[in-house]
Image 1 (cartoon, rainbow, N blue to C red):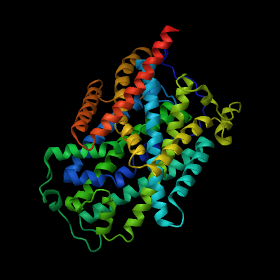
Image 2 (image 1 turned 45 degrees about the horizontal axis):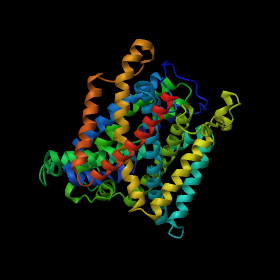
Image 3 (image 1 turned 180 degrees about the vertical axis):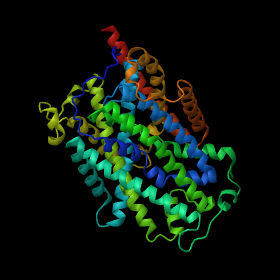
Image 4 (image 1 turned 90 degrees about the horizontal axis):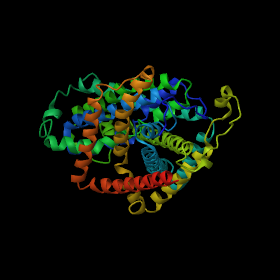
Length: 469
């Protein structure tokens, strides 16, 4: 475990600007899970999905605040993996780092395949596997170049997603009040009809939480990226502050618009409720517009996950928890001021290692989506909750230590410490228990638990070998 809380110098480039981090914080969690996956949540919770999103969003916001507090005090490319190591020991840093890397490179395959499916619909003459290859090559090249390329890609991707949500909220609100052509005020009929606001009771709300909580994954990448900005501590604090309430507004606000405008019984799981709303208010080519937005959301997530996985495995290598060969950084000898321009300071071997496993995942998804790849996807299904739990435990341990040793670095503080941290941990435990009682979610918990157990065994074995040596 590190004795000092002082941030260690990073050999990576400092090419990310504040605007990159702010938009990454906003756009990082706005993905296909919201635009398409929310339909499944509405189908089980009815209008109560608004409460489901409030609960899931509140938990995600608490985790983001904890992450922001630690990352502002101790910026590092390994973010919460480094924090876990400093709080709990090498085994924790090793475990959370490798679990998160595995999560990203498996989910990356889902995103690449989903984007390829949409592109194949537009250009049927190009096979789906060719689109996957094109996307993987393009984003690999972007991540091998200067980090500012990643920042620019994500800035514009996120700007489009945020713009789409804002426009949707404006159009939806106007339609609710009957201020659009050929619309009448809808009142509360859809909120209180068809079984009332909670047609399936609180059980439906809980099922809704299980359906939507993993859509909030991705918020962690902004704290990984902060280490490559010019003022990591200040920039991550600002990015987290600006993102927290806006993300909640986007998620909860758009759900409220959807269930107010349309009967919840009309929702079809797997189909975008956003398209249904845009169709109902007469927006031409709504399906194709939303297809473009979902396509961009998938490519954005693919780009962010490739970036996040490469930085995580690089950080693991820095701490001796991954092969040292991954430590090679481009342009290491160049002046810091020119690194961002020349493409220096990029962990290219870590990028290639992550994308190589990503290619393997994609091939498994294309060839065996219902067997081999399904097992891999189940093995990471609940890993996000395990990662969040270690973030919360790390924050509990580190906060006291930072207050003693470096209180001036606490520029962003967790709300209601330590009580809200304990509430977040209890909520995560409750979600895991509920997943175990749910037939559809149980395999994810069991497989993810097995994957986590395997990583922990390796971590503890390494600790024992180190002690004997």
